[in-house]
Image 1: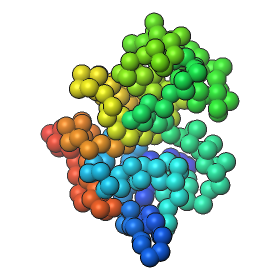
Image 2: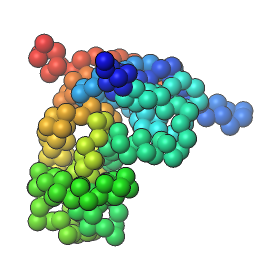
Image 3: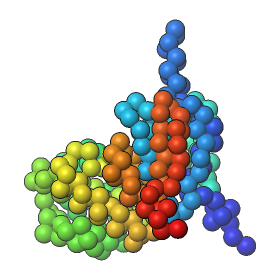
Length: 240
């Protein structure tokens, strides 16, 4: 018999609200979102600045607390988990790629990649994996370089490798090409998609760029804290 987690979607969002109360004002950032993401799907979350897409990503990752509603990650309801349990869950289930790279300035490229594994207590077995990922993102010769010695594109490639080092089943990327020029942005996007397909992860990509979103299987468009549309991307429709 399969476990509930094996049968569950990668992510379930149910009637999710995020409200900031500062009397007399009340700001509804997210307004009753409900959707699910199957395992292995690549979902782009689009919307203008202020639409709530980054807030949604933070709630799905357990980095923020909802006002009401629930989030289920790989069969585990994270809504009322304590922070220590959430941290352990994130370490096992989620890889992150941020717009601003979020590399530790005092660590080399290889050490930055190893950081999630060290935090989860699996750094010994992760070292060969880190070297493999450095090679896959084209930075084998930059392993001992510090972030300040790397270009923006190289730093984001290190961040990609770091996100995949623990083989998380879910990857979340928040505007991962936002700080890069078009050539470096395309290179990082290509690597992200390639690694995602090879690793068979579920990918949620937050972006305001329709061109990037068209690489996804599915596009969720947000407006004013609500889901405006939820549709298969053009390339996914063509593949049917």
